Image (cartoon, rainbow, N blue to C red; front, side):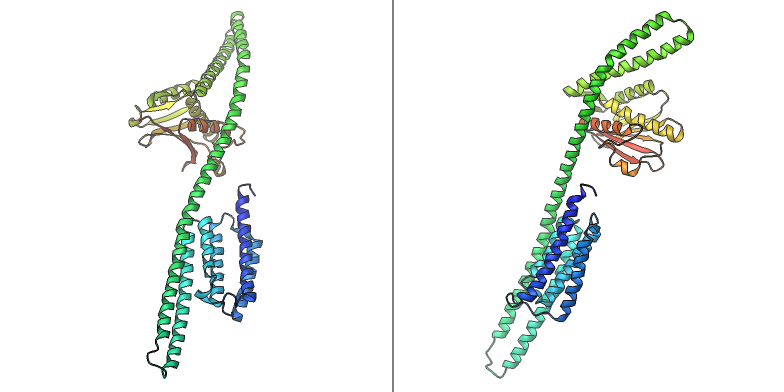
Length: 436
């Protein structure tokens, strides 16, 4: 059981205990408070109902975890609670029972814990039961008044009190019915709305908490990267001097080819280190620059061709976005390149070809969408929700790369979505705001 499920588990246990308290309240009222609250003496049939309800209460307490994250099962238990309450009320006075308002309890609980359809269903069911009890008690009173009138006919003809009393009680019962319906609707609408707002606020707080944890991890990674980059500067400078000396002392063609490859690798390391320094300064000072989408794509293509010449990029850009402006910093290009590199690696592992499709367009009038599709085996469904928000263990380090990219896009006001493609592979969808 995860920590997130603990509060829900506790609420389910409390709900099971509440059923036990309700059952004890029914027994106590029947045994000790029938005359005090004017309850009707229940028939023997109610005893069998209470025994069956006791079995239900014990089962719901023993297996309360079954309804965790199962709205249908939780609704069924609340519907049974309503049925048991209605049965008890019917046998102990019906609509005249002083505890008839307890029919609202399952409605209130469903309005807090379940989707909006659940309290509406329970409201309809409870209203039907209460209406039937109102009709039953009205018919009983009408019958008793008629009997009373018949018995009083030999007496004075102007005696009209029983009929007036019947009309007053009918109005009273109608008012009780309206009061119950209004109370149920208030619970369904108001409490449901408040519960929805609370759930939305909790979701926002949970997102902010996860974002804060993610930023703390990124800060730790950035600190470690900066320290290591600083430590790499001296070894790279030493290797540059050594390769320069090798060029002066060796003239063999094969050795010169090896030395040339070493120099290219060193050049790449030095350029990357310089870009890291610039990116660090840009992020620290929050420097944002305007860049045309067409220029961004051209720079991205150039970098991919330089660093990953084996990549087969198929780039499709919508004409209406080429001249649009996007706000960027030094972290945007590495973030996009990390996603493309992951896509290239996934395609190569699955189909032995470094093919990646990139589609650039508009999802909204002022929102750029870049879809990076690979031809790999895809990402497991349970990882799609965690990649980008948490560091996922991977032998290829893809989880950290996606986490860093996601953080870079968020800082620029964008987002990253991962979803499986209908045929094969994965789509990384990047959204970025465009300048108006």
